[in-house]
Amino acid sequence: MKLNILTPLLLSALLVSVSSCKKELTTTPTTAVSASLIYGDVDNIETVLNGTWAYMNDTYFTYANPGYSTILRTSDAMGDDVAIITNKYGYRDAYQFTLSTNQTRLNAIWTIMYKVIDNCNNIITKIDAASGSAEKKAQVKGQALALRANSYLNLATYYQFSYLKDPQAKAVPIYTSPTEANTQGKPKSTLEEVYKLITADLSQAETLLASYSRPVKYKINIDVVHGLQARTYLNMGNWALAAEKAAAARKNYTYMTAAAYYNGFNDLTNEEWIWGHGQKPDQSTESYTFNFLDVSSSSSYYYSFMADPNFKLLFDQNDIRTKLFSWDGLPSREGYLRYAKFKFRADQTGDIVLMRSSEMTLIQAEGLARNSDLQGAVQYLNELRSARNADLFVLGSKTKEDVIAAILVERRKELWGEGFALSDILRTQSALVRLPYNDTNGNPIQVVVTTPDGSTKTVGAKQHTTLKFPDGTAFKPNSPYYLFNIPQSELNTNPNINK
Image (cartoon, rainbow, N blue to C red; front, side, top):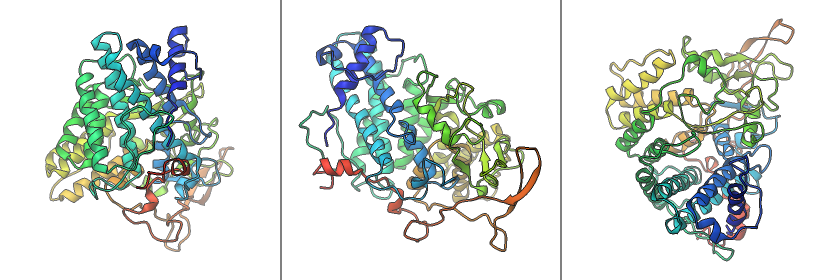
């Protein structure tokens, strides 16, 4: 494995600073600046951090793999509730569990995560010796630590089964020092080792960013760190800490109004968003993901992330989210179920949501429920349900398992399309559930659609087309089909990967 990819990116980031370029997040390659200049000053290193963030989010591998969003879209395509239109370009291979080691998407995911890690390693190991204020160094180093932790958290999540299944299972290689052209690839470390690094990085970031006031929500502040800690502890089964950190992450954020919920999940300034990636017309690579998510705008090119009709049945009639559903009546799309949660803005861009307060509320609820505090768990579950005008959950004589099940269903309803489907299946060691939407005779249930001329017609509902694994077996917990494969490029260049 060769990760000597750092210098072009960092040099370009520095030139942005030196030349006062209008774009803060630019990654045009160059080799005109020495490494000593890059790391000699904390302001330059901050520009390196900005360039790393831009690389992570705005790097195309193919049109179906626009930056970090690739991971989120793949997770949902491999889940319960997204019924991919398989004759459309994009995520059909993920939906059908046919990703191979040579697939561009797997190479994109692996490359993005490890390049971000390597860039962060350079920042973390070199910033202490740079000139600049201690306060600025803390801000930059803390963000780099959190960004490295987020990368390893994604790798641990998708390349091995749940930490709670076997913390000694081999997952992915760990690199904490900058790589060079002759750096030897490392073998896989255990999940325990990876999570030890993640928690240590986030703990240090928590201290360094305690008083940092960020200028915009793509920057990592203490709230984002707490959110990442909440996700990490949830994966590890440390229920009390998961709930505690989730509460800390969301304390400065409210729930969006119904009107805001219908606006298209495309605005970084949304009061509920804790973390996200902004887009604008001249810097919009990751906006391309809306071509898959957006199923209601005429400008959306692929509109392939339709909803499973059974997903609609999970919602109460008065729930504000039910208004997002409609049966598609356009030619070649008749009978598909739209879930119009994501919409392009008028300028064909859309900001990318990475963390919301509602997710943190559900982590709070789940952490308390798994720790047997059912009253507390239901309190937070109903807090979110009330915000969505959904029927409240009545505890009564319901069991711990009933409460946890309700929280997990609420995660599916609230976080649809945001990248949590496969990660929840893996961490809870559950089986994928895709059911037919047929009548008692085995035929598709008939639905009424409105055609472009305003007339209505009755057609069979379109539904999941992949109901088993590629080998014909039924979906089950802890299947190797759920795991991302290490790309062939890594297998070819790292002889130690499977040692």
